[in-house]
Length: 514
Image (cartoon, rainbow, N blue to C red; front, side, top):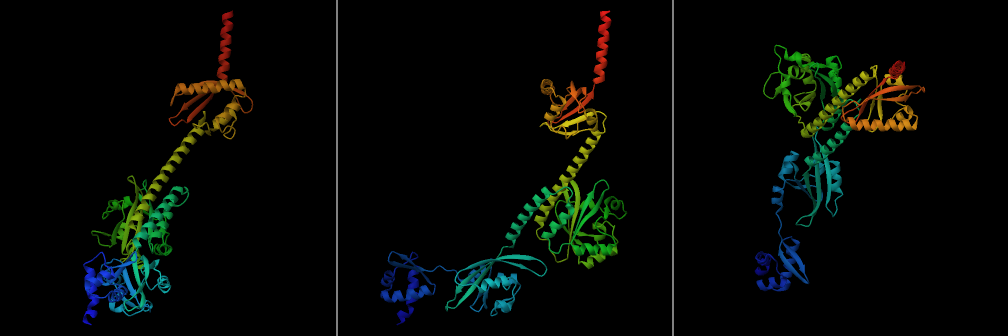
């Protein structure tokens, strides 16, 4: 009887030395017992999870079950784990879960999920998954936001579980996927804003756009964005976020904060002035707001607002919005300063997604640089066109593909044609040279002169031209091909000169005959 009672342990010892497994017959032969007895105990051990069985043909091959103790699993996994019974009472929880949920084990064991009112697992989304659990494992993403605004994401696996006594329950395994979610969200954000900045029309307020996009990444945003006026040496506030912060600032200051100027030159010449330009950096730097100077500290009155806002109002701002820190950066590209960004935080707040914000601000700085370059080009082109248009000499600009992109007023006065009449060189030659033979000769001479002269060399030639009113004129063309293939052409009416030249030639010929 004692041998029968000890048989399960003897079977386990026998299997331990045969890791590849043993059949019922092999176990019975080694232990010197009947096959029926071995078969009965192996079946019990299999139900208890202590042995595994494999089928090889008609034979069953038994081996020790390789299982990790639940206690070891709970201790060493990084995931958050709760084990629930059939009534959703918590029967086990690991240390990582206790630490993350800010709870003690005594507070949780024996209580239901609803009674415990735990973050994440007691949310309606998580409870719906747990209560709907049947035979199959269920995986769901759960979003949770703390009271202070910090957001977390978890992937929750709800696994049906059978205990040793046969009772059923569930094991909840929560993996913190916040960083993964943030990374995906930030990549989508940067891809979207990059396209929006490229497609942004010239008239859109880019500074307001910057504040709105930062607010998508920063909970409870209190943001100032200023443009830098290089000529005046001052920052000009262009946008503020959010609405309450903006309105409150206007109330405290008595004026609209957008449009306020902070002259750096004036601060630098102040007897107690610091050097705000020394703060210039390409990355976001966090400082504690403190009236007293020190390492890692900035004064709202002196360093941020350059003594342009009264000190008592600066103090009231800090108390009204509980401002304790500032994250400061500048809009810089290729050593050019375009503006500044100030993100105010409460003492306990943390600026999440700093890297994504820095990447976005680099994109915005490039967009500002491109916008300023385009604006300078527009002004330069406008000056050039004004210069040509006010010139008394008829002139036209012809693109390399033959399109007329500009003719000045003197051109229209000379020929009568407008840009609408001659959009291309083909139309110009058709109208100016109505005779087919003359037109072919003029086109051939134009092309030959262009090939012979090359780039940036004038190639004057005189042609008879028909004006819009039908009058014929002798015109000296002086085209110059620029480096990009564009042609700049001036036109001079030499009709009278040719007439006088003809008269003189006739008189000289007459004198010779006499």
